[in-house]
Image (cartoon, rainbow, N blue to C red; front, side, top):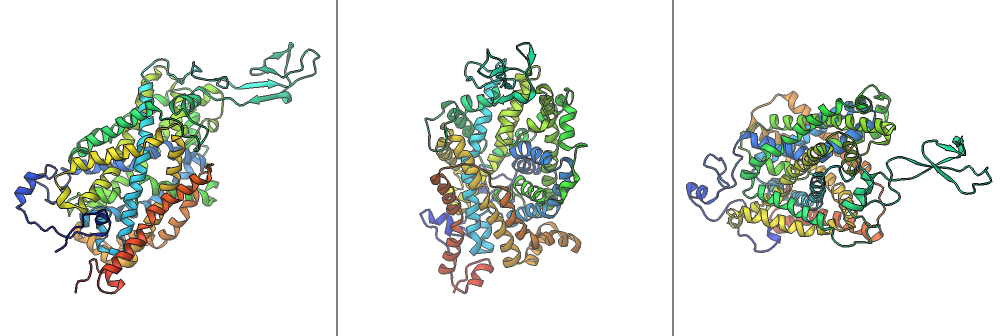
Length: 600
């Protein structure tokens, strides 16, 4: 019989295998509103139906990166040629990793911490995943707050970033500014500002004397001066930006409401949030292809300008592997947590294949919607598409809003776009918070079984308070700092140890038998495909991180804080391993591989 500690260490170091109190199954179901009468697992509950699970998984995998990162990577790495390494990496790395985590969660019916009861000394890997999901959840909801703010700001005509209005400064301009540095005339000793080669003293300014003055577009200044009220750097925190703080609060309220009853309530919400982005992308694509210059944007994205010579560059393959790894959200704990609510004999391979293909298809499809309108924007400005295409925040909150402001009925298109970003962010955040809730419930089944709503609301409230520094005037620097450090190196270490633990300690053949117990026997060719990539995946994962480090300038204390966050997540891996070895009987190999502590 196991007893639970009444301290925080209980969450991390204990592995409850059974409860002390035996209740009647019917009474349990009546007591716990999140357990249905048809659920196979009466202790944790199951998905109401297969559709809710699939929509939740698709919503988790398909996130903001599919819209604002993949299109940029595609055109940067050879256009259509980039699809070749992208599909190869999906087949040899993405699908096998996603299938592994889905199978692990479904077989054990536990969250990302307790699944490692099969390999106790690796349980710290699950703790690291939960901590990363917590830290990422803090700043990810700030991005949702940005989307909410822009969506509300879109309810006016003209759009506030469509021109240099009262909030702008003298450096704001819709057109390039040029200076004629011609000082030959006696009456002119100062450079003369001209616009697009206008006449100077009845003559055209010589081309070699024209100097361009850097200016900012209205959308860029609106992002910096109005939305963010950006300070000069991380050292200058400034006050809380209250319109962002209110949007952050609203975002957490939406998430708390959706997760009030765990998967039983979020499973209903994803019917809308997981499907609405596809409706908006289709509308934007239809509108985009009808615009002048759209063809140039699509050609630049994935058309005739594809560069097959790029396939010889290692960076292209590394970018493809990186995009697959982060787009599918492996090693975050969310895939394991969501699949843990499946019924035992669910065909998890078919589900994993469907989610992975849908995720990657969405990335390609989103690129057409994005670049068709960016092509029109480049046409309006008379610039090449390469000068208007951006990634990340620059695409979502500067370049694309600027492009939408050039369209007729621009507020409508802007509202749809930012509402789409909102739903994409919410789906991913649902799973991130579910990771925390699931692990707490698994650690304290008797205490938290009937208090799922309290866990969800309490988690959201705490993360809202922790996220307030991210909505100060220096908030964007905190967001990028946490994104750079938390969502990179830790995930790669977790994924690497996950592969090593399952295939080299637990045993690949042993895990295959577990999977076949759930989904039936598969051919040897099938398992050869699935196992083969894992022999080189540990090596390939170790090289991905080099492509993730952004060139950002932070003060020394900021960089130190970033490394402290990494250390805080990773330190539990050796600590838990040592604790398991010290507190268990038997030799370390028995503790690590037997799947249970060895009793006398």
